[in-house]
Image (cartoon, rainbow, N blue to C red):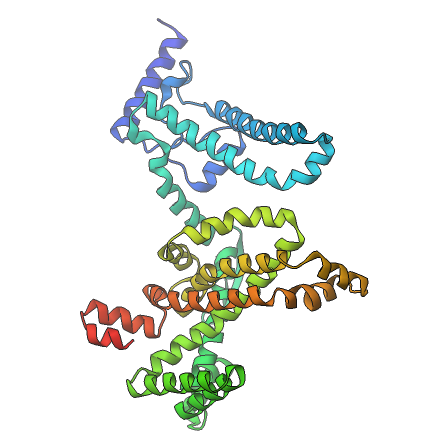
Length: 425
């Protein structure tokens, strides 16, 4: 074979050998990969077999995979539509109006199958297993996270330390702003219980604190905390709960665990209310909207089956290390049961109760907060109980990313094989 085809084959073979030897790193960054996909091309790490297209020196098999993606999408939509019209005759417009929320998960499934699974199967059967795109997924995820945190959508931020404006990624500034707000709330509660100067410094300066000895936040005496816990227990449940609360606080004080206990309490006092509010809001939203319920159900299934440690790495990447990262991981872990139990309680409300509320002239707000939620109070309180238990369970695991408190002390005791001290905690 001579002429143009021979030159193309030589270029193709040379490219193949260079990639095989590692002389050419056929990997594109996340932003470049996304732009290539939008142009109708696949990034080189997705396709590593130039032999798939005989006449092209560099493979451009992306149109095949894009068509595969569209076929998967069309197949999922047709299967859903056929099952609906087979059971009850509805028009295409009515079907779309009822099932439009399923198009998004169908698109995700189609993209995963067409752009990831299909190229991987091709490289698996026709090339070396090591060239499968799934082997490059950690690199792709890391590169995408780095691009999102430090490069995507740069904005000008004023830096008071150098008195200049600097470029910073929008996601980085948002996540660090959330972290700073959470850390301020945690430190505020912690200093109310244990005392300190950080909150005062936030509104003044270190020079002001050093020049004024009275500028200190005094610690709350443990007797006041014990008395408050005892009084709260008596109001809620009577003498039994009051005695239990008093005994628990006295036990913590006697065994020298007052400071880490208050640090854990400040941690829980932020995570538990946030999880309760988010769970209640999303539960009500899912009850009012079937589309929202359909979207939340698979997310809740995934969130409740994943291990505790799986939340730590992405939270640490986006929100840093410290108490604020532990609070965010705890909120993510503790919110799903609250959503489920809120939705379950609202669904269990008798239709007669709803009809009675509507006949009384309740509008949507009154019907929800004066009829439905009070009726579903039992299940919602079970959700609150689950939220508190999940927050306490995450206290130890959150110590792996810098959260202070009993969990951190327990982690140190176990690492040093101090079993007796660990049992105290």
